[in-house]
Image (cartoon, rainbow, N blue to C red):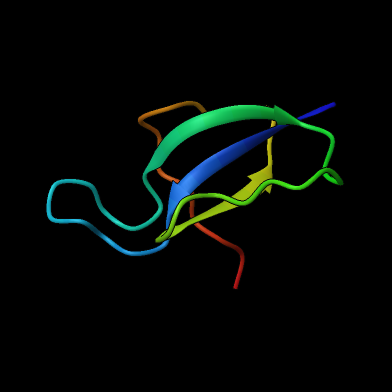
Amino acid sequence: MERYIVYRIIADGTQPAGYIVNAVLWDGESAWTPPNGMAIIQNNTLNIGDTYTPAS
């Protein structure tokens, strides 16, 4: 199991794009997808309320 952060890919009016809304433990293989407007990435350092900036 790895720790994944769930972050917004689109701002929603109160939270900017990149805002971390959840952290989950996931095996990376079983069927699971983040909610609409969200994305995930494996990360052990960022927390809910932080902002994730994807590498360009």
